[in-house]
Length: 122
Image 1 (cartoon, helix red, strand yellow):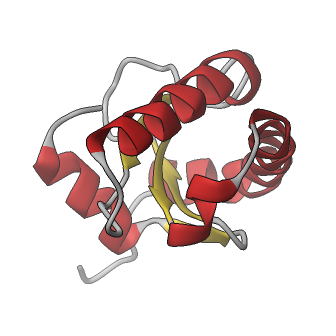
Image 2: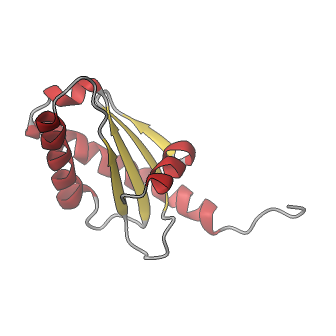
């Protein structure tokens, strides 16, 4: 996901999965593609472009290889905190595994809520 509007909608309405270094928002997929998608928000936090891009590349690889394969059709937005810049790749991998477990845990409720009809009178 790269569109700012989609990222903002998910960040505003998604279920929050918080870690010490990342803020993750999850919603049932807004697209009708039937596969999971991920977007990344890596604020400057006073860091150089090299540091930001390195963190983005690491997160993209972890999400691509560890979080999205076999995941339910949800949209994820990962927003980094300043402390994420100090983490090693192995520490980010552990966080990725945690995000995958939490996504699997909350996804059934999100998918059920998105597919249920609206209540009467609305």
